[in-house]
Amino acid sequence: MKMKLRFAPSPTGNLHVGNARTALVNYLYSKCNSGEMLLRIDDTDRERSKTEYEESIKKDLNWLGIFWENTDRQSLRIDKYNNALNKLFEIGRAYRCYETPEELSLKRKAQLISGKPPVYDRQAMNLTEDDHQRFKSEGKLPHWRFKLIDQDVNWTDLIRGNCNYNMKSLSDPVIMREDGRPIYTLASVVDDIDHNITHIIRGDDHKMNTFKQMQIFQSMNWTLPTYVHIPLIHTSEGKKLSKRDKASTLDDYKKIGIIPSALRNYLLRLGWSFQDKEIFTLEESINHFNIEGIGKSPSKLDMVRILSMNEHYIKHMDESELLKQFIDFCKLN
Ligand code: GLU
Image (cartoon, rainbow, N blue to C red):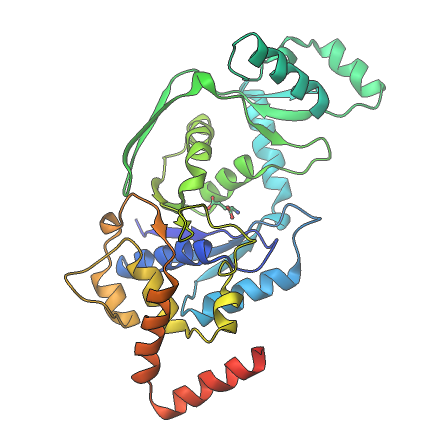
């Protein structure tokens, strides 16, 4: 079976350097296995998703040398998510809830005070069809939750090794909002199934989603993909890199004159090495890349190293390329 990967940015901001690394790893892994990569635009958040961000993400990926075979977007697939929800309802794995955020917050507080874990109590599962009809006549629309099965879920991650979690301590995730907008937890699984995705490579911050999404895959009788969770990039102080940090988006790097091959090489070498080689052409990256070689710990962003790598590339650049990079740099500043 052909290897199929996807990179799935949400167009709610410019491309973050951590996401650029995820895209690069997806790209290299697909190339070195003669696979394909899909660019999936996760744009179900109508207020925050913007076409200009989508365009800038695509441009930044190409700037780094990353290309893909196909594109899809979640906003075009709302019917598919509704069909999946109906199926989950039929098999008893999706249920309707009406609690407001305030009510849920009060429930959580009460649980914490009495020393219980703040897990959703599944009260809505006791509602009868009459109750639902009454809510309907009162104009109350339900949001939907996926019923998790209380059991251990585990997978062998190509980077993190054996990952295991007991689902008892997790709340049933909300998968559809009152207004009919699907939540990523469901939408992503439906997309991965429809696109025959074989490998899901994404940031470590999605690990908890993976446990829940694996149960959604299983409830739909679908073969599980192989999971790979990449450690996050941290600031030099060891904190999670946030949008507020100076060097967080690709734009921040472009503006200080970092050239694409230098940033790509830096991202490739974050927590990964091949012999004692420092500099890789794109072709060499594809030839030598092995995903299992990526370290498990978060990598600290090292601006001194990025700048010295940049210097190396600039010194070895031919004049016409240097001129092109210089013109691009002047346009931005
Ligand atoms: N849109 C999600 C994100 O940007 C995608 C996560 C995934 O790869 O499943 O975090």
